[in-house]
Amino acid sequence: MRAVLGDALIAVYPTGSLALAGYVPGRSDLDLIAVVAEQTTASALRTVAARLAHEELPCPATGLELVVYRKQTVMDGGVEAGYALDFNTGRELPAKVSLDPAEGPSFWYPIDRSITYQSDLALDGASPRSLLTPARFDVLLPVVIESVRAHGDAIGEHGDNSVLNGCRALRFGVERRWYAKPAAGRWTRNAAPEFGPLIDAALASHAAGRPARQSASQALSAAEVTAFLEYVLERLRDQELSDRTAGSPSGP
Image (tube, rainbow, N blue to C red; front, side, top):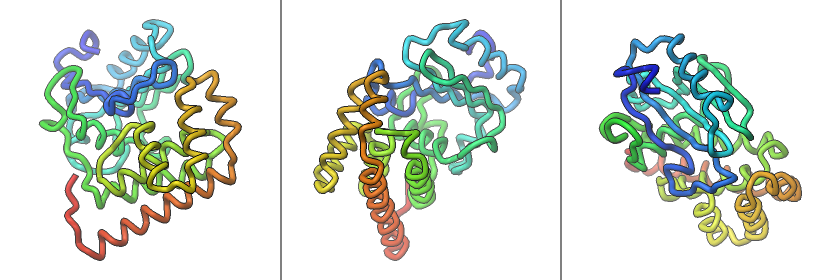
């Protein structure tokens, strides 16, 4: 990226499982955020995507998910997608090059920015907390609720991720802090033991890696996953209402 963008590349940060010490070889993608100068052109970003494509620079992980933002976007504390480039590549990840943040759901992007801010890890450039402004908890929680609802609408597509993202969302709602999916799953298993067998199955599927995960995920009961996500949504909505009623602090 530096070879293409030069000084216009301001910083590169891990996000997702990599930032939360939850990276699982053979299962996890490399999730990265890059921040670039405002004047960075679409042409330059397309060149970045071409140079980083798996066919040109093989990704050692199952996939690379890189989201590039112009500096002002990561400083405003908003919950819009707001990316300048959303790029996926890798041996097990469908290729994607998008320069239009209106092309898909927006909820993953502010969540990942929040994770990056919390971790405060930098691969290149200034620390995230010196550059990023995350959305406040009261602003981000409705986005987290939206993400859980989206998983409920596509259970067959997401498999164990539907369960473990639900666990991660639930723990965030309670503790206002992000955890890797396995840690969030173990916490939720104790917090909601009635869903223990489902969560254990999702954790086992997650640990098995992608080839084994596909069949393991298919074994999860759609009805049980739906019931669990409805439970998570109810808890998060209760938290949202409680915070609003109490006028609780709404910092990051």
